[in-house]
Length: 319
Image (cartoon, rainbow, N blue to C red):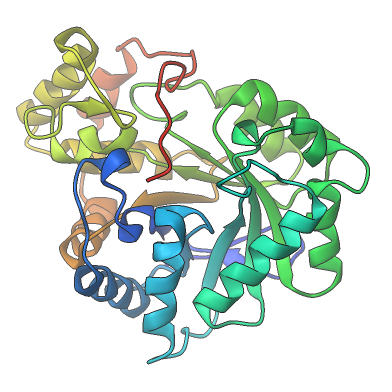
């Protein structure tokens, strides 16, 4: 695959990358469990493939995602040029997210992963911390993130979160190298559109996560009647079923269309897809290369989409 630069950091990403939150065994979020053997096989499949980024976080599965990746890395090294990305997280008991917690979070992550540094490091989910000022103030969490880069503990720093009303002003105030936004630029929802344009103009690498709206566009409305990790009503699922009907008419997989909708946007550096079994890695690669008739894109262009926060009513659970 081609590789796209992350600013002037020296890092570059393939247009498709993989996320590992599900590998941490998070049934409250995804509705299913993932055991260690399945997680290890999935990580190995990713490392053996053509994509060069695997994304994780300190709090995915309360550390299980990083620990399982670390177990694999202790048996094999990362491929040359592979970008392992992780995220700094608040203290999950108290919500504390000050500068000291930033250092502690990275130490925990490096210990689980068995590494002494990571290529790409994000500040994660500040909207769920106890005090946003702890993060944004002078010598707060964001300033400490940039110090970690200065100290050589990462090559690039980014911001990964959900709420756009908090994310956009933070992005505007700091020279981040990258961002991750999830569920907010899909066939169903384009609420991140303005932010993507602004970030692209500033040279920030855009990593668009969850192109399947939490999985429903990949697994289907009949098998997974959930949108953005929440049970969905028939009314909420109606746009999904319209997309499924268009895809059925042209004999293409809705998952392929949802994935390529993100990958074909010139602003997006890499599309980040969560996987939790090896077969999904192969399926994702096939969907990325699937031939999709122009008639499908023409039909989809006429469909309405949401521009409001898709997780506004989500009851957040970190497990």
